[in-house]
Image: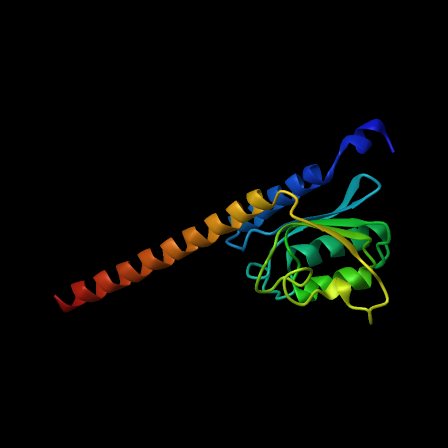
Amino acid sequence: MTEQQLEIGDEYWMGLALELAARAEALGEVPVGAVVVLDGKVIGEGWNQPISGCDPTAHAEIMALRAAAQHQRNYRLPEAELFVTIEPCTMCAGAIVHSRVKRVVFAASEPKAGAVVSSAQVFEREDLNHRVDYTAGVCAQQATDQIQAFFKRRRQEAKAARKARQEMELNKKS
């Protein structure tokens, strides 16, 4: 590794994931971004695309793992690290285990669907044949702020749309 690579830490990679989350948001998707890093280099990146891609599996983590596997020409990604802005769900945690990712770093916990520390705790299962190390809370406030702002805006837009429909109905009756 070069000196520059040694200086790059978890916050740097999470910053890239946060930028990718903004891409998802620009598509009207829940803002989640992910990068896969191996030997100090990004080998895969992804952002949420299930709605725009009509693909229920197109979570940021899955998209990043797919890109990394293509880059490596191997579905196994030993020694790779995955950085994601929100705690992975059960589907994504399963894919992480199957791809043999060494370590996952996530920013914000996801109390309802998170499957690392919040609910299912997939990485702690003793019946799985691969152990994934994880670090939680890197840039957590930035990720939390990003997702909360997205859902606040979405609720405001839904409220404005309901109000506009109600006004149209009133105008039709007049």
